Length: 291
Image (cartoon, rainbow, N blue to C red; front, side, top):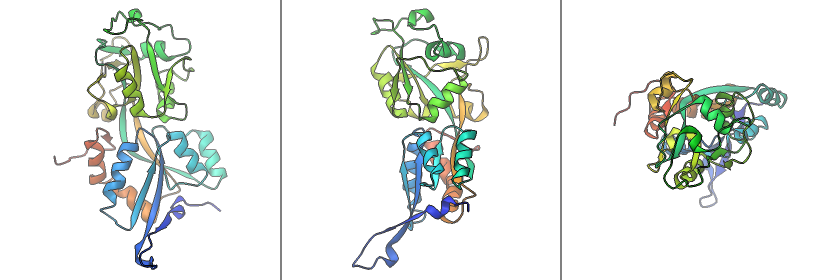
């Protein structure tokens, strides 16, 4: 018999004078993408004021971690910055869980360089040359770039660990499924990528645009030489003009019901989508938010 993830909503009992009857809170288990974790935590916090009888427990670990938990039936909602693979869908169904995809937003996967790096634009071909296993680009001088503080001229590649949806999407969209070049600094989280680039003049990295800080720059990206060079932004992610834009997803097993459905409806409503916009993500649909 297929198990609905909504049946996994657990109950957290807060004892008060030995009688927890009116103090029980349902807990929605939500796990996955580090790209989404900032907004997922903000949603969870805001939702506690909408329904005080429901708590949303958010944890990261990467898209692969969330999807694995959904396959195994241990979460109600899996966050992912990539689509599930056919193999993952088959594994979930074999366990009695039928994945249903929910589009909750969009993201421009920004390329980050140090604030002192003068590079203004990059092509997907150049990025593949930097990150791909067969890529010839190892030094900034090969791109006619001289960086203050980068005496070695080495391109220091900052990447994500392979359980990350960001890693998987970059490999598909930029490397065309070629393996990554060995020797990169593989970071656990999106924020970690940006902070390492900020501290390393020779570095380049990729991460969601919501993680930008003043100590880094985001060059515009061209799909091919001669194409328009597009800067990552909320607008360019929504209209698809930025070459490395992607959907942000939540997965449930089967159509959500009860408290899980109510929560997802709220996430996709005006309040939830405006929280996403406020935090630098692109809503699933054009959203008018009052400042």
